[in-house]
Structure formats: structure tokens, C-alpha cells
Length: 244
Image 1: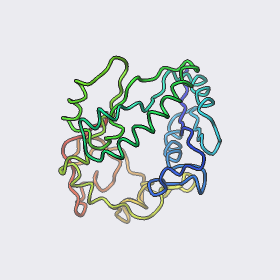
Image 2: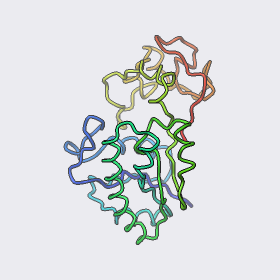
Image 3: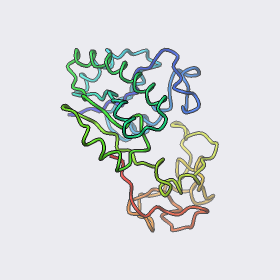
Image 4: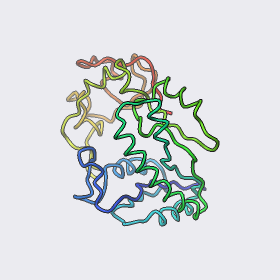
């Protein structure tokens, strides 16, 4: 029987990950926002386990041992060739070079540990330093530059490169309330305290069912959209964008 391990990997000592972009900074509670979302997933997967490595002071070697215990045969390493990325997307060269060098150093260290633990890992990776700008032209440019071995490509949509895709995104400003507590889940839609489309009496009543909404191809659990109500300054995107 397969078991599921939901892991927030080890980090640097006292690294806050850029506190402005994190739900929780390590300087405050020695954790990040990521484990919070892992706990939501764990609640839906019987027998799963959440491991938050930074506050537990787990090393990379200890995490590799956990991977074997849970039957995980492979790990992802951020082994991106920043030279190739710059050749295809020359914007913001200094941040991309800095990130590329840091990831390369970390990947070499992690590769030694993974190899010793008997874990398989990718030889190459692309898209990490160009996240949100993976356009069709960029992806096609990578095809001619692929090297022998296993290559992983981040296919996150090019939202930042396409004004049409960012049209609705720019209008979505989250309310300042926190994400819902796992011990005090709000009534109705659990995310209504921070949703910009919150409708009193509708979103904070019953839990919204998974249903089809007018103008959408995918199923949603959003009461206003399923009910077909017009949301202020919001229009549904007709085409479904998938994240590979």
C-alpha cells in the first residue's frame, strides 16, 4: 500500500525566504506558509504524513532517509542552465545569473546526498528562473537546446508575458484577512473571509458544492459563480489554462 509524504524541505538556518512573500517567516515561527497548505492536502489523503523540516531541524540526509521509507524513488533538483535561460529570455540578467549560480551550488550538494541514498534525480531543469513567462516561443527554443539525460521543464503559463491572461488577475486584490485556521474553519466557503468576491448570506452559509458554473469548462466550488451571479469587475476566462 502506497503512503503519502507531504514535505516542506530543509532550509538555511534563520532563512526567512523573503518575509514579504511568505505567510510565516522563520524569524517568527521557524516555518513557512507552505506547510499550511500541505496540511489541507493531508486532511484529504488517508494515512498521509506532513513533515515540516525547518522547525524540526531535519537535514537533507534525514529527508533522503524519509524518502526511502515512503517509497519515493526520485527527487527534483533545480539544475537549471542559466546561460540557456538568458539566451532565450535576456531580461533581468543579474537576478537570473544569481539564482542560477545559487541553484547550481545547492543542486551539486543535494545530488551527492541523493546519489548516496539511492535516489534518482533529473539531469537538467528549465523554467525555474523564468517562471510565469514560459511562452510558446520560449518552450520551442528549449527543444533545440535539450541535452542527453532527464530534463524537467516548468510549464507554468506565461501569465506575466501575456496582457490578456493578466487582465482579470490584476483586478483580483485579496482582502487582508488571514487564511482560514485548521482548527476554526469558517462556515460556508472556508476562504470567504479573504475572497474579493465575497457575498454575505451566500458564501458564509452552506459549504458550496462542486458544480459547473456558466461560462467555465472546469468544475468549481464557488457559490456566486455556480449561481451565475455577476461579480463586479470580473469576467470569466473562457479558455482553460493548464499548468503542466
